[in-house]
Image (cartoon, rainbow, N blue to C red; front, side):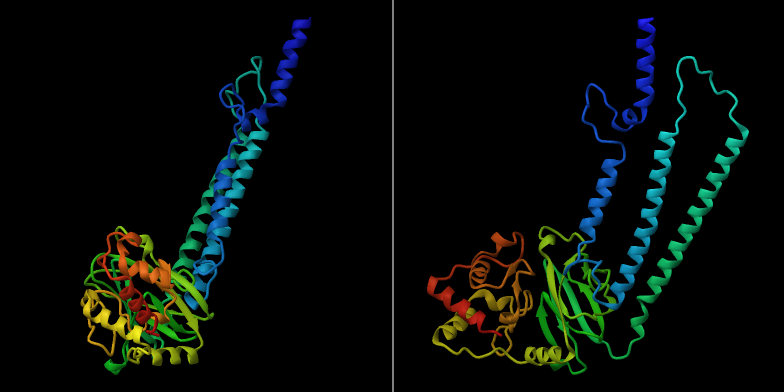
Length: 374
């Protein structure tokens, strides 16, 4: 009798603890296992948290017309797929909880209940129909969003900018109907709020991808095949862009800054950029200009108003007006300028800019001159 009660107690315990054992899978090798579904849920939740972070490089913090449409599409997709996930998990939990209990004396179910099978079949058919409807709805909304973000192609008088991707920096040219008014800069994009922008994208070496998450989606730059990109910024601020296509060793350091400002401030900036480089004001700046013009710098860089006319590297006419150097890799400080001039390979290994050796006084003078180019 005692042994019978013991066996009955063990069966009751097994029945009551079925759901817990099914979830935790307690065994001799993994006593601390997490419930099934917890890790996927945590992964999705964590991914949502990091993807949804708002800031100067987030597709979920739109600052333009096109990005707002893409953000709305993203939230629609997320809401529907999250609802589907919750429903599927709820059905799974219900199935586990309502599982029929059985033991060695339970007769096998060789003749399933016809009514129950009919209900299950109807539920499966309904789920298939609902899934098909959801997929078609998402497809139609995606097509409509794609068409909507192309409407700016019909906008009159957009600001035309040519962007050339190079390993590993961006050449940016503001084009004007009068060629002498064109402005060439590097790695920093200034835009007027509320005006349509037309970007002409091209590459000189490999495939790059131009991406400003806060303002629009991605667009590839393909060698010998220019592409066109339209967007419009609405919210003033500073945003980060990135090459989104692996393009070589320094792909991760191929960034650029986008500054959106009022049309008046942009016009003032553009007029200032059209001016030649300022003349040195001190003897050390004059010495720095002499060092620049007599070194190998002129073979790659341009400084308007001087004999330097190289086109291999970025235009340095107004380098002091930029906030960063090395395609967004470093803030523009005196120390960083010195390190970049003397040993750029240490900062971005593999780039075309060679190491240079200057006497300490010449280096100081050269940096003084570069800091005067505003």
